[in-house]
Image (cartoon, rainbow, N blue to C red):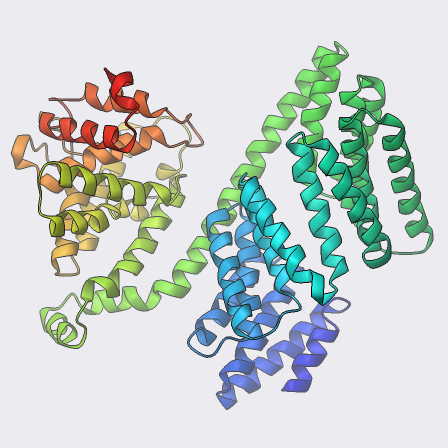
Length: 561
């Protein structure tokens, strides 16, 4: 079995098909022998091969299974790298919060193994996630931690990569002198330890020189980058198209910034052709944007409009594919981690089993809450939202409940229950839930059913928490004046939980950015909620809501007045 795993690792790059067969054979032997660590290693090997071949769903499912079967044992490298691979797949799906969670888990497990040599690599991944999230301060801090970790270990190849990313961040922030210093160090290291990075790092360094107004040094960097590319081509090396695209893009950006629009158009047009032939859509998107600007500066407005329209069309295509990948990774994660819980929930719907289970498990709520929260998260992602909405609604609902004098225990129970208010949307058809245009009356009637479906789903667990969650899911679209749904309840006939969650849900939906609308500022959102006093919302709850918001942000008091 050990020989099979080692052989699979040795031929993974050159012969992935053979590597997969070897890893499958190793997994079969490991499972038959009930050797969990080796089975997990075989699963991770299969996941890595699937990811290398572009089979993202398979990679995610296999890595998740490797984590599941080895998570209860001692920290192992297999567990660390499985978490890391899950983080990479989430990152590719633009699901940055989950990517960060998995990457941090990988770091924690890796440190528990006693190994050190690759800690900087995991830190680098975490920093890249922070960078993509726009959290540049944390990204810089994490990159610098990676440098400090690598220093005694001699990982100069990683240092070159880290310094290059630090230089890029500094350059994007307009800090051109630090960007030049960092970029020069990165180039020096890469020449000896990571020659495949030289061209891209030189192109970034050229842009930093242009920021300082040193166009001569920038031209030298570009010339050296192209010479490096041509030398490696002549040497028969296999080069990634992104290397050449990075150089061409940097040349185009620099020419555009310098007012040399003809040169910019020529460079960017060549880059667009290469990006299209090699299916690098993210780079193609940026090229269309730059070409639109270049043609506009040249007063060639028809061509500028053409590239702007192609940019928008490609952006929609990429967004749809990314959303689909996010949904599929969530569905795989949901299947792997909650199937046991959902089966148990169904089993518990008979009273005899509920009582026997309650005798064995003191905290039934904790047992089920994770599974239901994952279902609620899946519903949010399917609807184009984020899981931050569910948490925010729960927190605000609890604060409003505190403000009207409800017992602390009830308020904290509402905090958890309110997170599940839209769980019924998981059963609404994609064709309706994801419809980009207006809904028909029949479609809207189907959406309304998420309140009934949510109550039905949550009623399967007979505890105070889930009774409250079922009540809130069922009633949070009822209106104080009786014009809501699903039952047209009015006044205090609407459960208090539903009345409170209605306020929190509407506010957070307005104050959160969505793909179809801008993010309202806090004062705007509060005023809109206040406008529903006496019609959609109970007046006393609006007073409590405003007091909570002012307590959160005292400067609002004057603005709202």
